[in-house]
Structure formats: C-alpha cells, structure tokens
Image 1 (cartoon, rainbow, N blue to C red):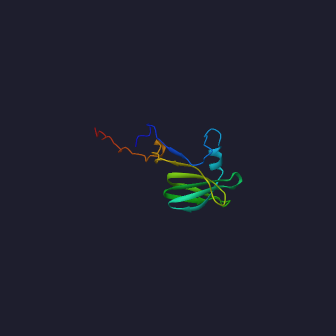
Image 2 (cartoon, helix red, strand yellow):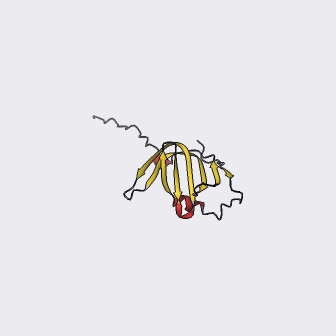
Image 3 (tube, one colour):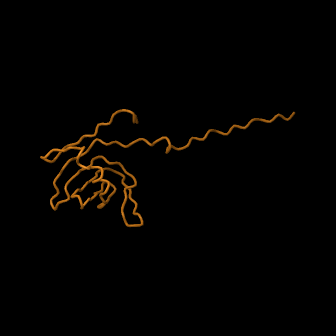
Length: 124
C-alpha cells in the first residue's frame, strides 16, 4: 500500500446549517465520547455533555475495558463514521467515508533476522 499518496475522505454534510471543520470541535467531541454498543462490525461513541453521537461502521473491531470500566477500541477498520446529535431522535450532522487501513509503521514490522554466518577456523 502506498501511504505517501493523498487519501480522499468524503464528508457528506447532513445539516442544513452547513459545516465548518475549523470551529466545530470535532476532535474533542469524538475524543471525549464514551464507547457504547460495541460489536465486531461497529460501535457508538456518546458525548452526552455536548449532545454528540458518533456511529462507526467497519470490520474486525476489538475492545478492552480499563480498570475504571471504560471501553476502548483496540483494533479494527473504520469504513464510515456518522456524526449525529444525541437527541431522542438524532439529527445527522455529517458522514465521513473513504477511510482505508494504514500500513504498519516500520517500527511495528516483524524483524527479519539475518542468517547467522560463522567463519570456518583454520586448523593450522
């Protein structure tokens, strides 16, 4: 996979009010949302304090629960991320699609061991 070329992620704005990525606090809303409703093909993150709900679709999701009981996504591939309000009837804000799995960084690649070469000793 060529990770040096540009990747296009499509953002389909669902709200009639428009969408400005520079002022919406998307990263903190998503980062401070708690994982709920987790399956192998998707999960939901809820940020109740800021009326935000994120639904991730994908494959092979795995999870871990920390000592405080908070669920964390530990693996998987996101194909689509839906951003909605967290109302009783959630209103869609935006859909993100076009993600692709990232290549493993070189530091995580399996080590390739070189064959051990021994030199024959001279018996003279």
